[in-house]
Length: 154
Image (cartoon, rainbow, N blue to C red; front, side, top):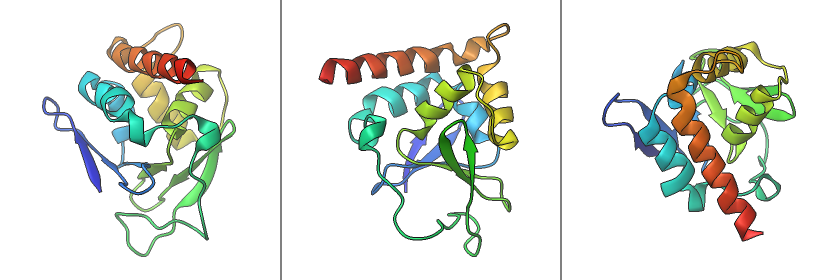
């Protein structure tokens, strides 16, 4: 696994070097939005290989995906809006395929509903439209820059 590490907070997000998916240990999803350093790295500096527009996303092959923390535990599938999310009921980790982090943020900001584990972490990390989390602003700006880069490439 590749590791994206925030030297200030110590937050560490794992990424698969083959499929470029992201693994969030329990409660880490909400913390990514408060780390300008990780937002920049994941969405901009290291984005060329990890992120593609959703229509070019890597599809899951085969059966259920295994939890990288709980070796005998299959990940369960759930949805937030149209995005399928894989999570472990044992350790409450969350696996996001390439581009799914961006899709989840969009779905949440549009008010789409789904898995409460994911929704609660998005709400804590991003805040709401009436009460946004000011610490998440760097993530939102990095996401907007990433999208502008995608649009220029089309």
